[in-house]
Image (cartoon, rainbow, N blue to C red):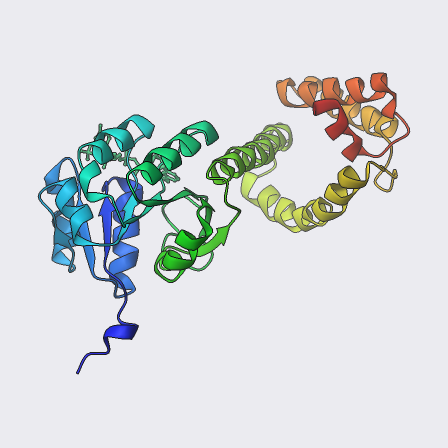
Length: 291
Ligand SMILES: NC(=O)c1ccc[n+]([C@@H]2O[C@H](COP(=O)([O-])OP(=O)(O)OC[C@H]3O[C@@H](n4cnc5c(N)ncnc54)[C@H](OP(=O)(O)O)[C@@H]3O)[C@@H](O)[C@H]2O)c1
């Protein structure tokens, strides 16, 4: 006899591009009964081979399950797909992993709620390669009840964090973390060009840089606390000292024939901090200049 109470709830996935296909595959791997739909039907073939049910329309996919995950190109596509099936949304928990702005997320949450659905906005933070592994990070915001209802299901995608009831917050974190990631990577690319000018092998440099990064990561919690307290002890040096160090980075790069766009931007920001009276403060005081 099957144990209905502990059976995993069936899930529908709308949109089978790179992300949606990976999500559906992770659900199937976790043993979740999964219905899939995609505008171009042929993209479901591989998933059907490994056990997915293919729905002929988005409305049929939504009607088939209480939990509906959508990952399509953008907000306009989400509205197009869900708008064509609005009559089926009542009682559903909608998990939208399509990228968008906080305003779009809040507006979709309002619209979905008006259709009788519970809405969770989500951000897939780790690309597609890690989907289905515990080290893939997924951020969610919106209805706390909806998150509780789907937490067991979406844990098939990776680790799941709920950031609060405001549907726009996951998207805001997504955007902020993109800035962190791109700042780190552009700094790394600049460093590769600089050490490359002396013939250093990029792979060898990457090993040393990876060993160095835990030091920088170790500063995040403390510097966040400093910004909350509005106190910036110069434990890692003052902005005046940092300005000299960045000048050194700019001149060393220029002499090596490496473009200085990346350190120039940092130098300008540090100068603004000094001009606004933070020369004797630690680097986290730059948040005051930015805010
Ligand atoms: N891939 C990633 O690593 C990643 C990571 C984080 C977030 N995201 C976000 O996830 C979303 C999907 O990304 P993706 O990489 O899966 O994109 P993708 O591979 O380009 O696939 C796009 C999907 O959207 C569908 N679509 C586009 N316009 C549509 C419309 N008007 N009506 C119905 N369906 C439509 C496509 O259907 P057809 O097959 O019929 O064209 C396809 O299923 C995006 O918002 C992206 O920013 C992606």
